[in-house]
Each structure stands twice: as C-alpha cells, then as structure tokens.
Image (tube, rainbow, N blue to C red; front, side, top):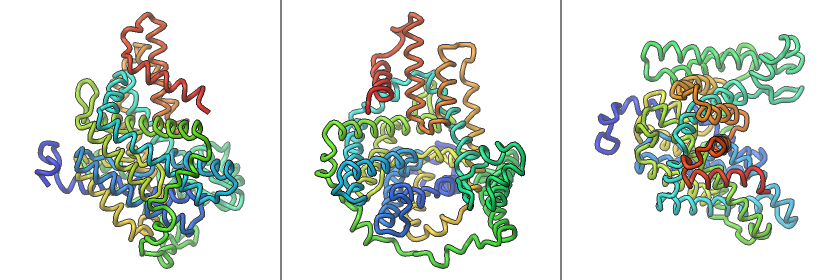
Length: 474
C-alpha cells in the first residue's frame, strides 16, 4: 500500500483512506438507484432499468479504480447528475424525431454520443490539450471554483437532496417548502401527510450535521462517516416510531443477484449508429460538442475545487497528475458507454472523503470496490436515508466556502467573476456553466479595462466557445 499510494508522503494511513473511501461512497450511493431512474423515466424493474443499474455500478468502479492507480487521487466517479437528465431528454427527443424507435432503441442510439465523447476525451487528454485548458483558466477564476462548489453542495444538501412526496404532490424540499413556508400550518397544509416526514428529514439532517461538527472539532477523522451513521439511525427510528413504517422493508423482496442478462440484452455494447445519425449530422455533432463541453468543465471544476480544498495544488493553482486524472475520467466515460450509461464524471461528493482525510488513490480504490460490491448489495446502499447524506453535503459545503479567503474582494476584476460563479453554480446546478460565466466575465472585464493582452489566447477561445454554447447552439 505504501509503495502503490505513497501514504507517508501524503501524510495519511490505510485506516484514514479506507474510512474516507467509505464516506465518499455513502455520500454518493444514491446515484446507484437514481441514475437508472432518471435514464429510464423511472421504469423500475424493466430490463433497461436493470441494465442501466448494473452499468452504473460497473462504469463507476472502472473509472474510479483507474483514478486510484493512474492518478493516485482520492476522487470518485459515477454518471454525472445533470448530464444524465440531459441524456434522458436527448433519448426522448430521438424517439419524437424517429417514430419507428421505441425508448430502448433510442437509448442505444444516444449511447453513441457518450462513446464518441469518451474517445475525444482520451485523445485530448493524451495530447495534453485538456491539461492546457485547465491551465488557461485564470487563477482568479480558479480561486472561486472551490467556494462555488461549496455553495452548490449547500444548496443540494438543504435544497434538493431529500425530497418528500405525499397525496398533495411533491417533491417537497426542506429549504423551499419547510423553512420557506410562512407558518408551520401553511407547510403542513401544503404537504399533507408528508409533513411529518419532512420534520423527520429536517431533524435528521441537522442532527447529523451537529454530530459531524462536534466530532470534527474534537479531531475525529471519521466525523463525517459517524455523523451520517448517527443521522441514519435517527431517521430509521423516526420512521418506525412516527410514521409506522419499516425502513428495511425493501430488503425482504430485494434481488441480490446482478442482472447481467438484462444488461447484455439492452445496454452492453449496444450502439445504434444508424439510429443516431437519423437525427441529422448537424444535430448529432451539436449534441456531441454540448456533452463534451459540459463534462469537461464539470470535471475540471470538481478536480480543481476539491484539490484546492485538500491542499493538493501548487502556488499557481495547478494539481499534480492532472493529466492522469483526466485520462481516468475519459476511461470512465468510455466504460459507461460500453456498459450502458450516460457520461461518467468526477463527483463533487468526493469532497466528503477529502474532508474525512482521504489524500491518495486508496480512497478512490475503496469506493471503487464498494461500487463493484454494490452489484450484489445495492439494496443495503439504498436504505441510507437521503437526509443523512445531506448532513455530509452541508458540512463539506460550509468548509469549501473557506476558499473565499483567498479571493481579493478589493479587486473587482477578480471578485466579479467569482461572485457570478458563486450564484450561478448552485442555481444552474452546473459546475461547467458557472465556470463558463466566470471566464466570459473575466475576459470581457480585461478587454474593456484595456488589459486584453493579459488574457491568454486559449482563454479567449474557451470564452468564445461558451458564448456560442449559451447563445447560438440549438
């Protein structure tokens, strides 16, 4: 382990790395069931759902294990949120444009986008072009990535991570529908029978947060993991006592056998290039470029932001082994295409493992192995309450806000792009789009203040591409 991951050099040990890997996995385990739900329009139990479920576990494991051994970084990968929803929209549009296709056939056609994207990323990574793109992001913009991700995590934690449904509708969220209600009675009337579940959700997430903060204050490295476990127990007990529900009921009817047959039949190496090209060359190329841009800057933002928080960057804000990390990300995307899921990218939830002390690829390897095991034990991962993972997301988000101390608030050329990123990232839910807004703003400010020569040629190119994406590409 020492020779493989250079634990002493990174001031860590095996126990810390294992706990960090488990922490990251628990924080993002929701993707195992949510990704197939989103990609199949919640067609739970269908052959396509089963195929995407298994593809999610396998592609996440492959990409993450590559990250462990190639880059020796504690970053974990899975099919990216946002990108999977966009993929599902594309599949729906292919069905609408080609009436002869059913949803599964359209899904197989859309997988061609992911395959081409992964191949493009491999080429760009090997040729160091993606690394040059990272270096083209001005330091002032990079300084804002970590705190902007922190705000996004906070928004997810208290905003959209744990939704409640009831006979009156949903989803209902803690910040918008509970704290945002004028009075408790208004919230209760709006949520109906879901109000008690919402109270339990709020209590769970904040109790878990308090446990994490107290333990972290005492120097307990496993504070995030312990906090999530405590929050889970509180939520499980609350479901039994106040809701009369059995939080473990799903385990009795759960399947513990990986649905290999369904994956082979529906998603494994199932590329329908003829169906994909039936939508037209221009649309096809546009979709590939769009996926590439979103994924590229989501990944870059996550790597730079999380590495900055962990002290893994040099004085210029560059992360060692960036090329290897980007290659691993590309391998994950190709693995996703081959097995049958949308773009695999570095997850922002990796920050929870970093806060738990993860500093090397052993953290990633631990999470990768857990993803492999999830093909058998997914039902266990599924019973982790979303509210418990919110505790970790809120805590990590708060810590990442500390990156603002490195921003010069007196320099508007630096602060204005950062400020826009801070608001764009949590609202749009896209790291890549927020970086694009920051780059465009930075470039425009430099041009109109007579400092155009301070902007690199590649920064101009990237800013122009984002302008095209935001305003011209349809």
